[in-house]
Structure formats: structure tokens, C-alpha cells
Amino acid sequence: MRHEAWPSRVGQFAEEAGFDRAGVAAVPAPGSDEDRTERARFEQWIAAGHAGSMEYLKRRNEAGRLVRSSLREAVPWARSVVVCVTNYNREAPYSTDPAPEGSGWIARYAWSGSHGRPADYHKVLLKRLERVRERMSEEFGEFEARCYVDTGPVVERVYAQYAGLGWIGKNTCLLNQELGSWLFLGVILTSLELPASDAAVLAPDRCGSCTRCIDACPTGALIAPRQMDASRCISYLTIEHRGEVPLELREGIGRQIFGCDICQDVCPWNSRRRVPEQADKELAPRGELINPALAWLAEMDESAFGRYFYGSPVKRTRYSGFRRNLAIAMGNSGQAAFLPRLQAWARSGDATLAEASQWAINRIVQMGAERSGLSENEKPLNSSTGMNLRQDLPDA
Image 1 (tube, helix red, strand yellow):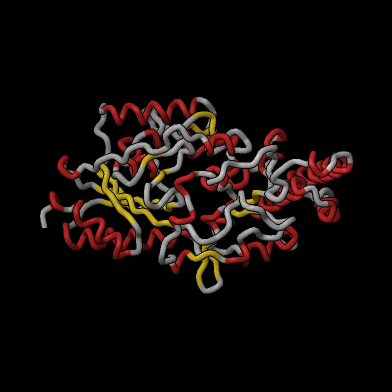
Image 2 (image 1 turned 45 degrees about the vertical axis):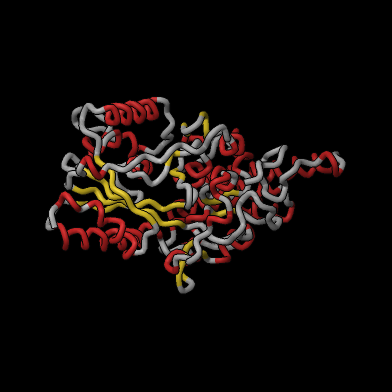
């Protein structure tokens, strides 16, 4: 088969490998409008300090250009990007739904497991991408290629948009009209040229005038439509950030202990009717990670944490960061039952945990004092979610 015909077969290969959707996008030529736009956008984002402490995003090459500002910088031979999509939505509560007292929240994407054990979506999807690449090589001959799942020097959602798989929503996530935004994205960088006749038709922006995601973000990370200050994002703060969490952002973190789903929970395009008819067996959720009890998680020592979350994305936060997050969530719960645990942690040799625990103790005491002086009608709404909001989130 000639290389000119290759894009039409990618969707079939992806479906056979277990993906829900696939598309192909060309790498913008140097100096093109797309190339200049993406470079400028990334440069401005980095210059504004929105990458926080994620130094890998700020790496520059010998010419002084940001490596991740363009695939032409990071992977000079890349000419096209195959983007494969898997829907991980499930028939399960959202973080904005009423929840049991004393429960935390782990981001939906990190629930997955099979046969009672964690399943890291990075590894699951990478194997599928390799199968797609192998099928492509069998039919089209040899070509250069690399497969990535959240680990490569590429902004996946941008190429997913170029591939016609959806539009970038105001919460900066890729949105697909049929699937919503609960999507894992995997990419195959290739040296194959995409024929102009196979360029995808871009999906129209269907966010309209809706700003539910922006309005609902408790820490103000969505500073404008499609503009995120990652240094304020709960996902960044609970996963990537090391050390103390800025004081002004702690109440907004609420009960989130790993990642955050709020801006997706409130999105109308994530209606529950978009739950897949056939659940992905390799990425099925472990029920105990949905609204997990903070007390249960706090009982884990470092060894138990390592065993239970072995192979899970949750390991990325590390044990020290995990307990820091638990302390903040306990403080935001306002529950005095957590005080003994927090008091023990406040004497910990881990300075970050000790500081977060002392903050949590003070917050619980403060919230208790405030509750004792308020009538039932004066108490804040959404107390079951632990979020510091005075009004209900929009109905998604």
C-alpha cells in the first residue's frame, strides 16, 4: 500500500487496538500560521509563570527556544501525529455530587484497575499505541515513529484538535461532541507526510457563552477561557507541586487529595448519558477509590501506600505529598474526629506534613467556632463536598 493512502486506515487499526477514536494531524510547517501561534502561546504561558515548578516544561535547546513550544524543535523528523482517544467515563458519582462525610476525592482517571489491582493508564494505552504502530508498519513499510502517553514533548490536545477529534474547551480540555472530555489521549509521532487531501475538518467550538467551568474552579486557575494558570490548579498542587501549598489556595482545594475533576464535572458536554455502553475492562474503576474515606487512607504507612498504589498514577504524588494532601482535606472537612491524627502528624519529622497538619488543626477549630455561632440557614452550602463555595455549582 502506498504511503499516500495511510491515514484512512488508522481509525481501523486504533479500534482493533481498543481505542474509541483516532485521527491524524500534520505537524505545522516552520513559519506557518499554526506554527507561529503555538510557539507564541507557549512562550507567553511560560513567561507568565503559569507552569509553576514544572521545570521540564521550561527546558530550552541550544538555540534558546523552548523545546515543547513546537514539535519541530523537539522531534525534527516528525511530520504527522496519530492521536488515539479512549473514553474513561463511568457510571459513578461526580466530585460535585453529595458525598459521605470524611471522604476525599481522587481524580476519575486514577481509579482504574483490573483483577483487583491498579492499572496505570500510561502503560495500558502505550501497549495499544505500539499495536497501532506495528499494524501501520506492516502495511505501509518502515518509518520513524515514537509513541507517547502524557510523557512526550507534545501538547496532545492541540494535535487532537488538528486531527478533528474535538475542540479545546474553556477549561483547556479536549471536548468531543459524542464523548465529552473524559478522554485519555495517546499519540504516535511519525515521519509520514500527511497528504493535504486527508487533512481533518476541524470541529466547531461548541462551548458558546457557557462559563460553568471557569465559575466553578475553586482556586481561580482558569484565568480566562482556554487559559489556565497551572500554578493555581488543584491537579498541579496535589500531584506535581512539592513542599507547602500556598496558604491562600488551601481552602479551595477542599477534599481533593489527588487531582481534580470539578471543571469537567460541571461541563454540560459531560452529561451522564455519555457513559460508554461497553466499559473498558483494562481501565475499570476500583470502587474503593470513589469517595475514599480519609481516615482509611491516613492509616496507610509508607509501605502500605506503596503496595496499594503500586502501578497507579497516585504514586506520582509520593507518600509525603499524599499525606500533605490528606491533612489539607481533613482540615477542610471541619471534622473534629481527625484532630488526633493531625496532632500526631503535626509532630512529624516531615516539616511539610507538620505545617499542613497544624494548619488543618487550626482550620477545624475555626470552623467549629463558626458553626457554633451560625443558625442552620446560615451555614455554607456544599459542605458535603468540602469545597469552599457559598453557592451551588451549575447543574451539569
